[in-house]
Length: 233
Image 1 (cartoon, rainbow, N blue to C red):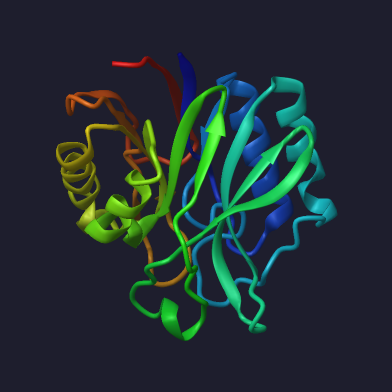
Image 2 (cartoon, rainbow, N blue to C red):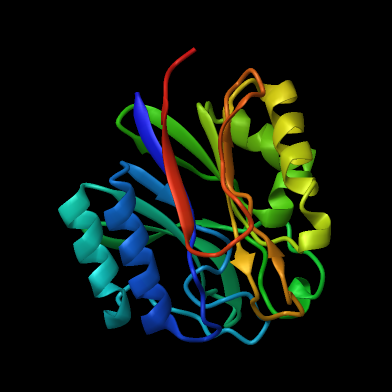
């Protein structure tokens, strides 16, 4: 079994210190082994967000919270790319520190003008569960799900940011992945306003079983989180 939580914290654009504290509250409140956060959750979604280093002292409170809870937080933020640009990344944060777990491969909208695409899929092994990692548009590209599933996964985990008008995209993509690959799917989806023209994001973070049933579904407001227990089927 694996206790997995999804969170859609209150977010302030560019205010990393404030956003870290909201992540800390969610990690403490959930008590889950793995907590998934939305795309660019540490900065807010905007093309102008600055890269964050894994040794940034602003992340220390979240490292400490994860250590105390025995949790792994999968959080969204920009990181530095070797070409001098920025990746759209998913960080792994636990009591041992911070590392880059995955870089978004399929950039959407204006992102290619501001970010560097990642080059390969990634998985994270947690207590014998293999989590395939994804960020937003990745989830709608069948090639991404197929190449990630080919690595041998139990769960497809994504941090996303969608507009309120596109809220139905998330369950549609999740169910497509389930039909093709028969795995659990978990989305943490931005809620409330953020940058990049997103006056209102979709929220509605959720976890789906391999049979397509949603075991939890959040609302559209920021500040919501919940967890569920995954079992092998």
